[in-house]
Image (tube, rainbow, N blue to C red; front, side):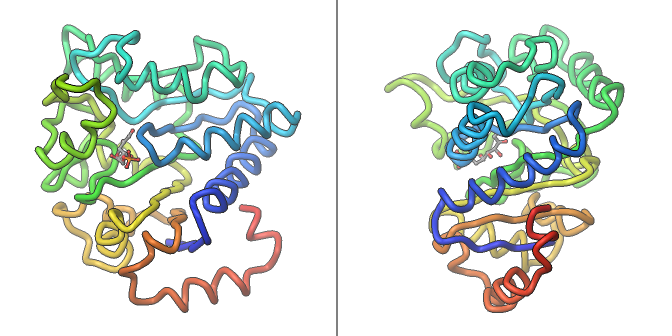
Length: 261
Ligand code: F6R
């Protein structure tokens, strides 16, 4: 696990964009695993900027999103499908057929989840998975106590996550209780993972995922079992880590080629 501590969310997002750029240079038809929420917004802005500058071409890539709220259709303002359209897809000329997001209105959820898993495998597997982390240590919507081997399925959100995400919903509107999410096992199958976390609200989760024991109580700690994870955080999110000096040292003394991913 590589921990990269940056001055602010803007620099972290620029750093993360380098890994997307490097992948898409190597593999035009890369399979990207994408996340929603507040954390990746600046990264999407940076990727759009690079696309407009002619430095990034998404036209042959495909995407698989981590999760979706159950009961929300694509036009619902808080649905993740709508989020992705507004924050990213509308600006990057990615063919609609290449976009995959779990269907919050699926009638047969287990069948839909199995088909989602199969679609990832049929596409060749995810090359680069982007993650945020919940204040309780969730990745995707795998809440504490999720199986570390879990696959795409229905999950019930914790009250903490429902309350953390309430600001994405209109005043008085209820945050759904259920979601469809890739499992932790699904996430760990990605060839490369980049996790972003910003702000002191994420400091406990970051410390637990990087330096704590691997435990289903901190789903993100399962990333310690993956051979290629970059955790890119700002100073505030790094606030509770023990070994920040070492992480900075590792980054500063990298060969230049390695910094580019
Ligand atoms: C989103 C997702 C979640 C979020 C996490 C952090 O697709 O899977 O794990 O990454 O809840 O959310 P924000 O970024 O809003 O703090």
